[in-house]
Image (cartoon, rainbow, N blue to C red):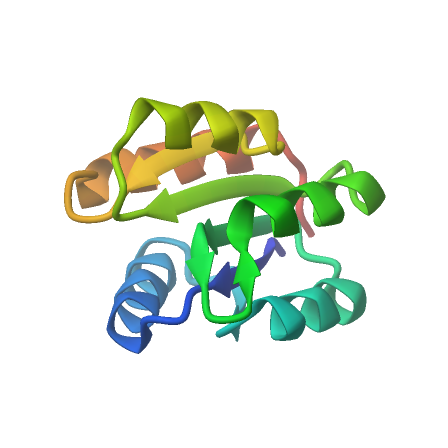
Amino acid sequence: MCRTLIVEDNSTFRQSLREVLNTHFPRMSIEEAINGKDALQKVDTLTPDLIFMDIRLPDANGLELAKQIGAVHQDIVLVVLTSYDLPEYRDAAYRSGASYFFTKGCTTRDELVNAIEGILSTRHYD
């Protein structure tokens, strides 16, 4: 089973992403965090396989958080989701350890699902 953590302060977007994941990946275990502090605690207890990370969080920069998490947990796949489709954000996300970068509102459900299917196909889950 793939353990997934959604780190997003916008409850509407968080729930929408959760619904997509539940619909297309019913065996996926999903936890949520609304800020950086909550995310770090859940990473330590859950040890997720996959993290969806917003860049702007109330108490943290998602890219800095990604660096912190990646320094300790190199096997976690990080997907950055942001409203800011700027080349410098994309570059910063990849430098911070993101494997994927998607723009909220521009990325289609199919693009997201296809990327997740690709991630899951390269890993073996019970």
